Amino acid sequence: MTSSKSAAIVLAAGLGTRMKSTKPKVMHPLAGRPMVNHVIANLQTAGVEEIIAVIGPDMPALEKAVAPHKTAVQVDRLGTGHAVLAAKDVVAGDEDNVIIAFGDTPLISPDTFSRMIEARAQSDVVVLGFRPDHPGAYGRLVVDEANALQAIVEFKDATEEQRAITLCNSGVMCVNGQKLFGLLDAITNDNAAGEYYLTDIVALARQEGLSCSVVEGEEEELLGVNSRVELARAEAIVQDQLRHKAMVNGATLLDPATTYFSYDTELGKDVVIEPNVFFGPRVKVNDFVTVKAFSHLEECNVGRGVVMGPYARLRPGADLKDGVKVGNFVEIKKALIEEGAKVNHLSYIGDARVGPGANIGAGTITCNYDGYFKYHTDIGAEAFIGSNTALVAPVRIGDGANVGAGSTIAKDVKSGDLGLTRAPQKSFAKWAEKFRSRQAAAKAKK
Image (cartoon, rainbow, N blue to C red; front, side):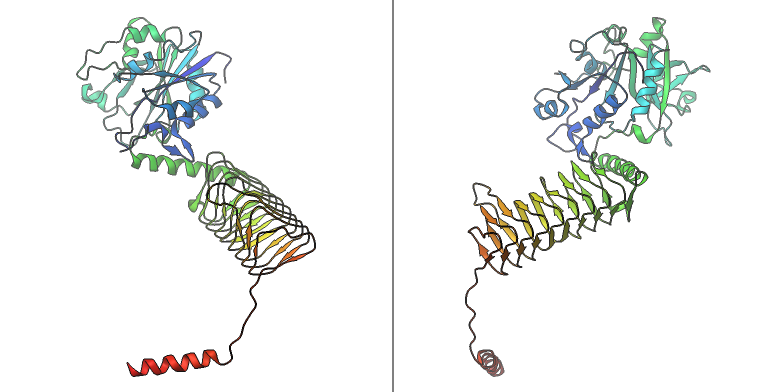
């Protein structure tokens, strides 16, 4: 961290062309949130106070995603230097450091951004470099013995000696805020592509006698995401990081490779996660919880000591209090399940409250939707709901009430009462025996 004032310009105007997508490239999610929001979060953790996203025209979803941060619009896509210039009138202008990052490079760590800011105190231009296993056609960073950056050389323009350099250019920079736009204004588009390249500011800075240096990052964190294949690779990296964090902080993952977290998943101590469990955004799991295999959780709270699954689904608004049991093939949506209640088998509980100690029998459903509106079901403390029951909301089952198996309950059941709807049972003597004989004879004739 540093006391100097820092801003960041995040270049995010790219279309989803190579993604074969109709939405902006940086809006594709990693661990439950858009790539660009990973970049913004890491910049904020590094102490960057002001963040401006450069977007393309007609990108309202992207503008909403980066809010409350400011945006600038790059109308014509004429290169990276041109993109940064689009933010000129939006940046406050009193920054000591301006980081230029890319919305499609979401894995750069806060520590790397912090090191760039610290290095900027000694250099006017800091370039983030890396040493890939296969440098290929990356631009090369030419430095002297003192780590001063002499030049950025594009691969096609490099000599054989320069191509042998393993230090490559990521494109990410941290520049003296008082010098940045003066350098950008001096860039020309006198090149084959007719574009304004951000990398040209290094040569311009050296011509003005300004200092340039390099900070090195890891190859993995500098993965740029330009295709669905690279998106999958980035997702795998993020998931490995989240799994490691969960285990270090006291959770047991029986098969880490099959557990998928969201960026904001919260796990307590002594949580056990069985194989093939998926966490969507905004899930909090408290201490001593067991999530059994093949369960799916999103936008929900799981209290202490809960046991859920296998094959359980918690949808948005599910709130399980301490000691609740949720069993196999149970779905809960926008429902409060209070302390010690049990919903063990093949049930749907939606738009409801299940009181403490209540027991929900197998096959129970809350009929909460009439095609137009949702209605609430209230099940009291210690109530017992028999198997294969349909509770037609709005309806209330009182404390300690029982509902007989196979019932369809459309009226309130008072506390301590039994609610039951069941057709009278009839028996027809010898009917089954006669039926089998008749059918067997018919089959023999064929």
